[in-house]
Structure formats: C-alpha cells, structure tokens
Length: 67
Image (cartoon, rainbow, N blue to C red; front, side):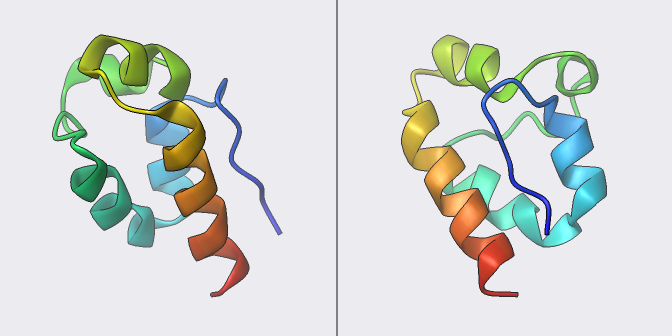
C-alpha cells in the first residue's frame, strides 16, 4: 500500500487515488487543477495556503489505509 509523505507532488497523490480529492478540498486546498499542483509538494502547498501539512498527510494516509 502506498503511503503519502509531505514531499510528494500533489498530482502524484491524485493519480495514485482520485478518492483523495475530497480530502484535499475539505482541508482547504482548492487548487488541485492548478498547474502548480503538478510541481508543488504537499508541504509547499500547505505552507502557501496556511494548511496543517501533518493533519492533511494523516487524513490522506488514513483514507488509503481504510480502502
């Protein structure tokens, strides 16, 4: 099973499992279609958007574990 880390690129996580989209959106990250999502790490995007990266990673991995 894949595990999401802060240094992963957002689009890589989305390609891994489209079911992660709502988790990103619920966290306040609404830029998933933005060109930056193809080159920006989760940690960098969270810093820009004022989102708790650790909480987002926790939620993404919890989702993947419970699939």
